[in-house]
Length: 217
Image (cartoon, rainbow, N blue to C red; front, side, top):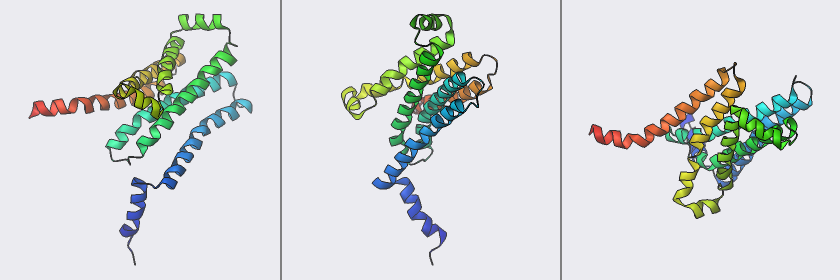
């Protein structure tokens, strides 16, 4: 009779190297899971559970933009800690979903909050720092979404990686946008700030580690 260790080996192998069908199922599952926050936010707004549905929807979409950005930044550290390599193949979907939620976040502001009054929008961008920072973050996110395809990776070659390091700027800007928005209740943005700091410091450490190791020798 096979023991538990023997039975666990095929499962571990499937987890580390899923076949095409299993990986397709994982991608579909992730695609659907990423839509759940949107469904929940829309239900909450349309069902009358919110005191200010437009504000709740706008803030919720912004929060999920930031969360998905942080998830994309978590992939490399998780891979370094032994997570399966196929996680890297899901990072693009997470990044595109972050852009999707950012677009909806911006659209709710432009449409439901400002009714496409471009004069008022420009005044808002100039006078309100959290909107200025938010617009800057969205502007930096736009070229990353446009160049996320395999075709752009081939065209840009090494420059593609350099361009997509803009995410290291976008994530802190997203946290700053959130912090300046809430003003007083800063607990949540400070938690996100700590997460971003850890994720970026890990990358700095990985970059500097060979130099530091050489100096020690």
